[in-house]
Amino acid sequence: MIFENESAQVRIDLDHGARVASLRVEGLELLVTESADPLGWGAYPMAPWTGRLRQGRFEYQAQSFQLPLSLPPHAIHGTVHDQRWEEDGTHGARCELDGPWPFKGEVRQEFRLEEDALCLRLEVHARDEPFPAAAGWHPWFTRQLERGEPAQFLFSPGSMCARDEEGISTGEEVEVPEGPWDDCFVGVQSAPTLIWPGALRLRLLSEVSHWVVYSEPDHAICIEPMTGPPNALNLEPTEVRPGQPLVADLRIQWEAVAGLQA
Image (cartoon, rainbow, N blue to C red; front, side, top):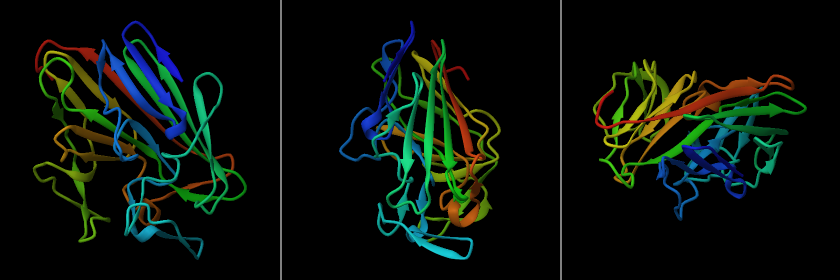
């Protein structure tokens, strides 16, 4: 699927999780577009959970469930990012929730390209019975565009979700330390922003409750809006019911800049 206008071109790869495989603005590629690691490129949807799920286990309605350990010793980023999706109309795609996920349902994603923004909508639907879920996106933004200076990151969270010795969120909140980070944040006070001086300013706008920032790599930075923290199925899941989906929206908005001006 390809969407384009005068300023941008977006390519959606249905074979690899309906991810945004390419986002070019004013001729500049903003994403990491390839990697041997399926978790390491593009901007892919995460559902029916986000981040690491401790040891791939969760409990729901007095039952215990075990999922495959996709990043041993944990399960990570849901089940739909590496599945084949089907087109759903001219602006959407859908994917069945089956296989390792113990509940029947589907995930839908909608894409809308505006003059200065890419708008994404993610929905997790239950079919026959309720289940716990979390959802979000995992974009890999490149630090260096084909022109301009390396990316600068503007971010103002209220607090950070504590992690234990396994690197898993505990549900507690702590003060925000200096980066680099591979952490989840809450109370974000303004839209997370990337600025490539001399090229573009990019703002991520969403009403989700949690943001993960992975700023450790030298080549990229990940800014991940999510409806709950990592390990949410054991901490803060949203219950999805038939006819009552979990919905998340993200607006990726850009403008040209001549220098580093917030």
